[in-house]
Image (tube, rainbow, N blue to C red; front, side, top):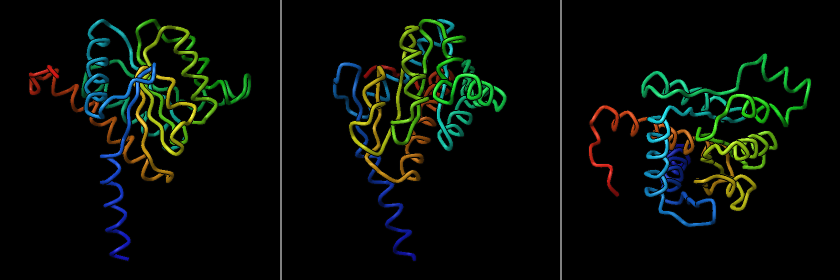
Length: 199
């Protein structure tokens, strides 16, 4: 058992060096470069009064709620999710589960807002529909996905992070770490602890 546990964490550690990131037109970025771009985007858009939305299903929904709370409480950035049970059941009942993020994004998103779309498989219809709704409203999109390399979500955003693992636990752990890095770096910059924003 000890060896299996050791291998588990070694695998998790190795995934952080294997994350890939691409742009909207297929540009390939180094991971730290894509993180820097994402953090700058969040800071700049928030400074101009824009909002941040996060969407996900299951564990990815919990990541969304967790990080949204951290963004507004700790980083002072207006961030929210659409995970309220009444909203989810209402939209599902009236329009179908595919539309549970599309409908509120269409209602609440404004040009220049940011959407962080999280899906382990990158194939969830409601996440894909939410992203397309965001793009129609000229919302900037950051995606986090895993499983198959060319999943449907992995090329839809302005910046797309892909974790090369097929197990939920690994993908979700890395996605959560990426999101925590977003928050922690934004807080550091806003507090003056991270002063050099040059590449």
